[in-house]
Length: 111
Image (cartoon, rainbow, N blue to C red; front, side, top):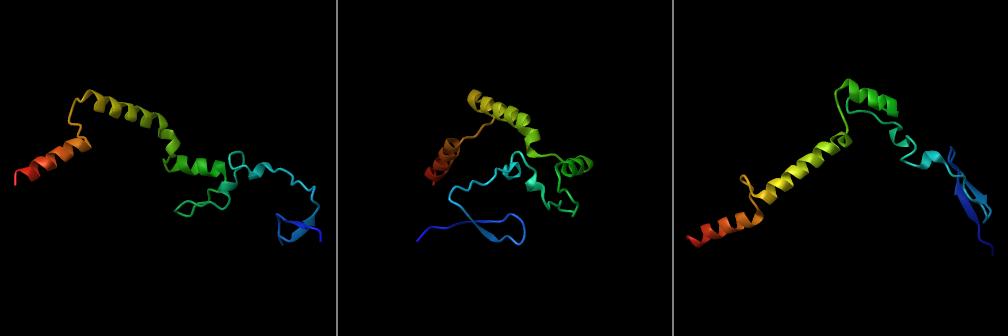
């Protein structure tokens, strides 16, 4: 009994087709999420606007004064640096978990 191999067609009616053991599918650039725009297919904004292409999405975001999270990477990095410096220097009212634990212990021991 020989083994059979099938692949499903990528277009309707999506039939299964028998292929040889040496069959290698043709690589498709659209299957690469980073290189293609397939993740935009059928995409709509919450207000129903069509943003199914990169250019439509970019134009919609600009028109409504919106942005994506990657626009904040520099400001988040600066804020993290400031938080770390604040914690290390001890200036200000930085409260740690240990500080809260000590305060609870002091309150409970006064009973």
